[in-house]
Image 1 (cartoon, rainbow, N blue to C red):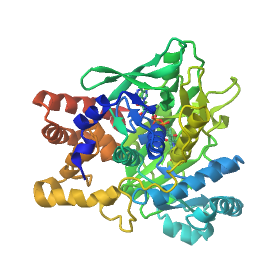
Image 2: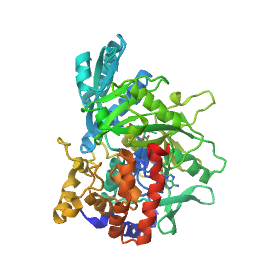
Image 3: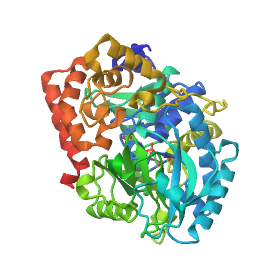
Image 4: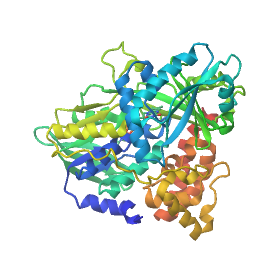
Length: 527
Ligand SMILES: Cc1cc2nc3c(=O)[nH]c(=O)nc-3n(C[C@H](O)[C@H](O)[C@H](O)COP(=O)(O)OP(=O)(O)OC[C@H]3O[C@@H](n4cnc5c(N)ncnc54)[C@H](O)[C@@H]3O)c2cc1C
């Protein structure tokens, strides 16, 4: 791999060498990265700016499912499910190193549930068509216990087994960013859009942005600016019109992470109806178990949303309803919260569960194109629709979409997932070579987690990681897997990063401290 391609100084040079962009994308989450990938693969000169880091927002805080959404099926939203199942199939082909075929079991504690969910999931399989991941089936009580040995057995009738996709969200984001750079796009993290540039008619002609590392501000010109900022959408819309109406409302979803011993084996649990009418998942993820989520309406959005006490209690209680060995608060290894960017209801009576989960492309009077809603699974289709819309309104010359069969950086089939490095796909060899050249880089950063020193250096050289948080939250998932271990890893990660990026001792100290201050809210003892 050509290290230069991913280096910040090189990317800044390409930035300064371009006067006029075809497309400027604001936001480096699933949506913005998807749009940049679609745009550059059609050959448009593309710039993407992300204020903190790729997937810093909602896109690193999902349930990690590549799915059609069994819940939407129950709501009769057939088109949405069909579209997502199709995209699930494409993503499994284009990023096979990241998307895993995951077995889910719905445990049945009422006699009719086995029949009811088997029929529903047969419809789910049917909607996936040729891209189905395998057939659903009803399984006996004995088989259910075999697959889920920690499940509460009292009153259990049996289970329904179905298949869906499971992935690593922020790693996919980083791999998409690399794919874009490799195709010639310019992408920068730690670069915040602070204003929209408008001509005398009010039409958007670019953005003003600030490099948050240096404080330097720039003006970038383009006739097409795409707002892909998730729950921050209205902040951008207010830059063009301070009186703009609210278009997005945040709904918070919390996850708790436990040791794998609470859900040994390979299967996930899907609880189709909790006491508040939601779906709860317990999913094996990087040798831990991820349990969530909630759906809490919030007034305001932030970059670091905090779980509410009631949300934590709700997940513990609901999970325990299904376990023979209960989990306690102290067993929580990490807590993370994410914000769904839901379309704002038209009137007060609409509730979050009924608000549309499909995506929307909106064109403002100023020509600004905004893409909101949707989900990780459908990021490719959302991008295709966004760029097609820009073509339809005459902002871009017509060219066909190229992303249906576009392999994402690292793509290779994976059969053995015993070593945690499988997630790097084709990059695994490069990291192994680094370790062979210097054995000390094979040392673990913390005994409770598998991550090694070489991964920090790799993240800085090839994955645009600029801070301790970039590494521990989104390149390796330490913060989301075991927050206390992540805090203990921070000083060594700061040292390795400082060495690699040529930073001072003061920088190292500040990085370690600021990471710790943020990360403690992922620890149960501070919640
Ligand atoms: C709890 C939860 C669970 C979910 N689970 C799943 C799941 O299992 N499967 C699935 O398919 N989907 C899931 N989703 C949905 C999915 O995660 C989101 O739809 C998706 O991540 C949204 O991506 P986004 O890019 O629109 O927003 P974000 O990821 O929030 O990205 C927006 C980005 O814009 C940046 N930004 C904002 N303002 C500026 C600015 N001025 N300048 C530059 N950058 C800026 C932000 O820093 C941020 O990184 C889940 C969502 C939640 C909340």
